[in-house]
Figure 1: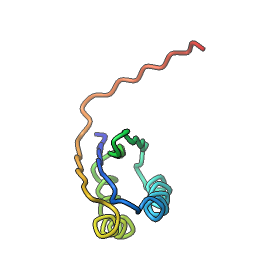
Figure 2: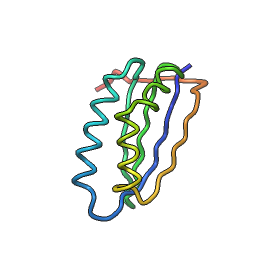
Figure 3: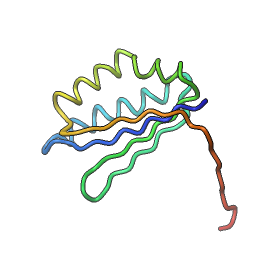
Figure 4: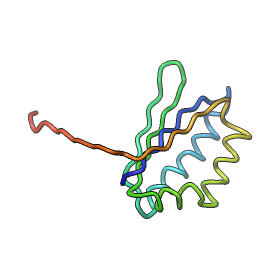
Length: 103
């Protein structure tokens, strides 16, 4: 059962550069985790950020959620970077992929 995390956030003013360093480290780190499937990032025109991360199962998601490096990044996010965030974790019950092979 695939586990999907949707992380929505807004940054405090003036923290973009240090935030990007930590975010790049976490993007690289999560890709090394057992059970990682993919990660996608979006930013809206009004500044809201959305990250979607998928893991193969609950155990691999839990390993990521409880990893000391991830916990340290979360703490730094609350203390230094985020003005607001919302996290939703769900079990994916259905997936369908379509890909056109036309140019």
